[in-house]
Length: 187
Image (cartoon, rainbow, N blue to C red; front, top):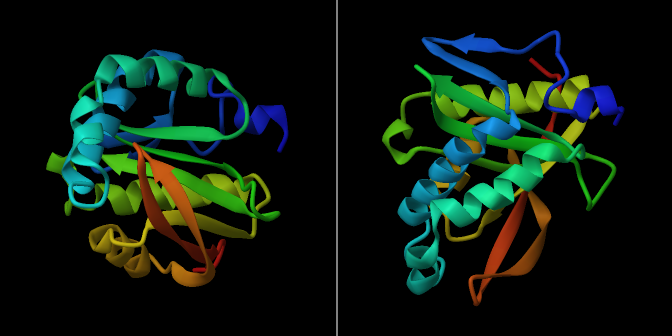
């Protein structure tokens, strides 16, 4: 991936996109607090029963802000944010996969109040377009096996369950993740 495709402060011809009244655009380092807030709120709402509750309770926006500051300054991929009236209400991180010569959706999270309103669909579609524009014809993502809400969402968006599974340790809990795949650029 060329640096001009990865660096968040460089202009891109296809972004920002307007999705209703929201804007989907490339994230800037100054977006780290908003991304962190969404990250923590989404994990706390989506993962009880799947990840250790004490770990979820220990998540802090300040700590995640530091992590997102580092991530948003790197050039490995792109982070897109959905913003409404200056408030970040979702993000999607994409880039080259470490597993295959594919693109990967590293993460997509929304403020839980935005769930079920079409924002996730629009944000994921923008992430898929970003991967396609970067030269990826196919993409993958990993999701917790027990996260039935997310799995159903990805399947509605045309993602297909792949064969690999992996075990990750998140907050001291071993969890199974399943791989979803999609051919990009198809209408």
